[in-house]
Structure formats: structure tokens, C-alpha cells
Image 1: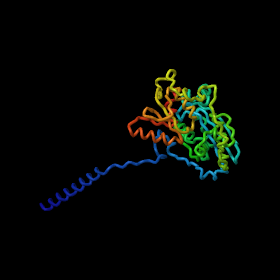
Image 2 (image 1 turned 30 degrees about the vertical axis):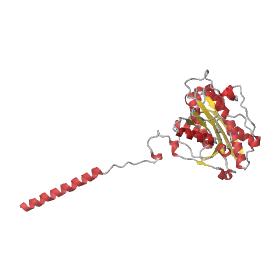
Image 3 (image 1 turned 180 degrees about the vertical axis):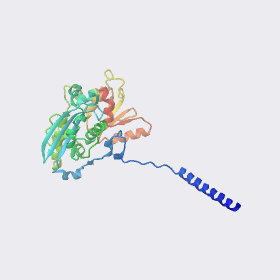
Image 4 (image 1 turned 60 degrees about the vertical axis):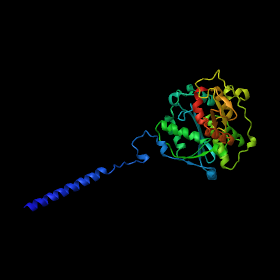
Length: 345
């Protein structure tokens, strides 16, 4: 009898030991987290346009595009913010012929404009206060972009404007192929049209720019090479002093009229390279209005260097040498500069 009781006690103790061990093992096992793919995310607050990628046609593939239909686009913005589209220019080409063109004014968020952008394209708040939002016209132009070959003169700007605006309205970003006439030629649109004998009716009008871009692309894909000898020396002239050419003493800082709150006020700034949105003269005029002291060479006193494409190697090397010696020189690209200066010109 006693032996039987001892056996039962041993069995119970063994069972308790097994259960305790199993519980300890279970509690030490880490929890697992399931990571959903983008299209399974429950939250829509992450911009869905970041989940898709588009294909870029390079010059090596250009000859495959000779018979393809395409859409040329151009956007004008109300401010330096990419989601502030205020005009859409769209030009559709089928079988080598322009079959559809449209210029659409849209009201940017808050119908807010910067003086700087108004000086570029001439569009004002009064012109868009009663116009539809981009959200309202997207379904009209989407079929011309989605799954199409899309051409632009500076796709980095125009495609990013589209991406930012769709993000703003929480709309999905379409898939399409792109080709950039600026990257392929290295020329501003005004110079490219001259070099290819293409008419540019009104630069910085979205439809005029999109149409000229389409015509340039058709010539480029057919093998025509831009003729640089046809490019004229341009001296910016306009009733607006914004477009006047300045040089020499005119580049000295205009501290009397500039806003002291400008980040460039009484700062030494050097401009180097070629810019895709504005000419060097336009940039220098903006700097002057913002109170900058524009210099031709980089020194220990330099505060900012505005760097464009094909910037001078000597200047770039000088920047790195001075920075390695502890000199605080700030490097800016064109978009960063526009964002900083737009409220002071």
C-alpha cells in the first residue's frame, strides 16, 4: 500500500515538472510580427505613390520609341512646393501626329502663390480662385498618363510634381514609362527648340512647353542631332526687372531694399553650373533681391555655393578642401535654393 502511494507521488511530481518546463519554454519564445506588403497595409496615411516605380527610357533604347504613341506633359507650380500645381499642359501624339492638346488651370492648395513663381509664369491667384482642384481633373488626364510613354523636359521636376500632388490627395500613383528631353540633350527648353528648329510659343506656359517638348522628342527619336550653332545668345528682357541681365556692380548686395530676414542677406554666394528651371542670370537676380553678395570665386568667406549640372570641378574641389579645414560652406541645389528664396523675391 505504501509502495503504491509512493509511485503515485513520483508520477505526480514528474507531471508537474514536465508542465512547468513546457510553460517556461513557451514564455521564453519571442513573439512574431507579420509585416504586410504595401498593398496589404491597413493604413492609407502612407503615400501609396511610393509603392510603385516607373521605367525610364534611356538614349540607348530611344530608337525603339520611333513608332510609339506618347504623352508630353508640363506643370507650372504656384510656389516652390511640388504639390502646388496651378497649370497642366498636356499634348498627346499618335502615329507621329499631335492629336490632342489641353491647358488646364487648377487651384493649388489654399490658392497660395509666391511672388517668385508669379514672375515666372504670370499665373495669379485671381486666375485660379474659381478653377477646379487637381483632384477634380485627375480622372480626365489619367488615361493619357497611366501605362503610357510620358515625355517631359526635366522629368525630375514634372514627375515629382505629379507624385507630390497625388500624395497630397491620397491618390495612387500610376505606372508609366518616362523619357527626359533635358537629360538627353543637356539643353534648356528654349535652347533645345532653337537647335532643332521647333517653335516655342511662350516659355513657361504649360501647354506651350509640353507641345514644344513633344515636337523636340519626335525629332530626337528620329535621329536629328541638336545644332548648337542655331542657339542664339539670350539676353533676358522684360517689362519686369526680374528678367533683366545684371553684371558687374549690379551684383553687389542690395541691402537697402532686401529683407534682413532673408537667409542670403549680406551672405557671400557663389553660383556654378547649369540649372534646369532658371537661367544663371535669373538666379543671380533673385539672389540680389534677397540681399546676397554674389561672388565669382570660392574663398574662406563664402557662405553658400549654389551648384547646378556640370559645375566647375575646380570650384567643387575648393569646397571640399575648405570644408576639410573647418570652413562652414553650405552647398545648395536649385530646388533647395528656390525653397529658401521664394518668400524674399
